[in-house]
Length: 496
RNA sequence: GCGGGAAUAGCUCAGCUGGUAGAGCGCAACCUUGCCAAGGUUGAUGUCGCGGGUUCGAGUCCCGUUUCCCGCUCCA
Image (cartoon, rainbow, N blue to C red; front, side, top):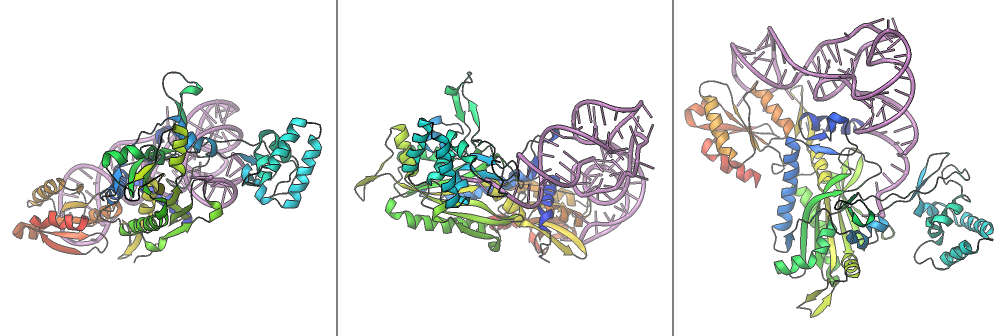
């Protein structure tokens, strides 16, 4: 009876519908027609999200080598120059006007063979032979390509690229001269600080929380008297003006990250990378996520981001396919060195034991809270057949469940509601609980199943005699009898 | 950004060739019952996504737009 038998194509729609019906997630600004790629967390959703973040925070900062931080969303604009986001967080893109295929300009060259490239370049030289300035620029780029394919370098040049594009055929449909002009698109949200909206007042909504940690490295280190290796953890909102949002909470423009940056001696980077890689996967498993739907996706060396030496994604198998829920990166000394360079301030660490001074390497664990939320929600969702009826149940780990226990009087008479209310009042001191006396007892159980409540406590006729209640387990639907005095202790053990 | 589909009650949907809205479930109240979505009675909730147009009259036809889903594309 544990079959998940939902068609993948319906699954996201079903989850969206359940999420709304039960108050997990609503569309942002729904009464105004919604806002693309933005979602609100409802009463049950906010509890689940908070529980996920709380578990992450506990596992990260309740250890002696990690400190917490909550940095501002708005940061000095130079931060984003140092991080590379102003320059690199853009996608120059072109479309084929005929077949509508879209290409990233800076990698278009990868899908064209060398012979065609040579021909296009020689055609270009021919066209430019009267234009001394451009031909010099072309020759210079050809002679100094650095690590790049010179062809792609020329494509990325504003003037040369446009002319070169006219020499190329679309790799998809083969039509000539069919490309649109390249359009640059920075994914950072821009706003202005202070009353004047000019370029000197531009600030960005942070596209990642990591930079707030990097720039505070020495503040945290010295105030907490930490020695390397140690980490800084932060949970917070980040914003990316994505071209396409999709798949419910998976790609949104506003999202929440749970990031931890671990500062290490460069000699030990591999050890700590492997350590955190294992640790982070285990975290998802320990909160009940199906291990068969979790995997690593190691980034091949030639696909690494500009800051990374080694990188892996933890992926969850969503109904729409495998998707990243967390990234673990060896960021090397890239970030701290860049901030040294751009700020002019030293971010080196003096290692007393080694008697050496160095810029630490950083092992980053970067988890998407919103993505994790969706993965936990989807992973918990089961439809089961019980006595010929369909039971929808969210089998959250008790630590993550929005409501920990529901309390019911079996019937609304003989003093049962009074006892149930007493129990509710007592448990409410420590737990998020729910009281329900509406409808038949079976219906009340099923309502809690759909909310993911792990325990249902029922006051019945025997309670009146011996002050015991039944406690019903969500997953097995089995009941056991327990003394009212033992309820808090019982729940603490189950929820710890 | 491209292509396809969709949008009517909280949810799932019906609503014919245009004539000013329905069902099931859910929700609320009461009665009855009393351990896994029980029965009965009663009730609340819709500018038919939004904006135009055609028409005597538009949920229905046309145009635009927003949002969601699917497939591409994209995702330093």
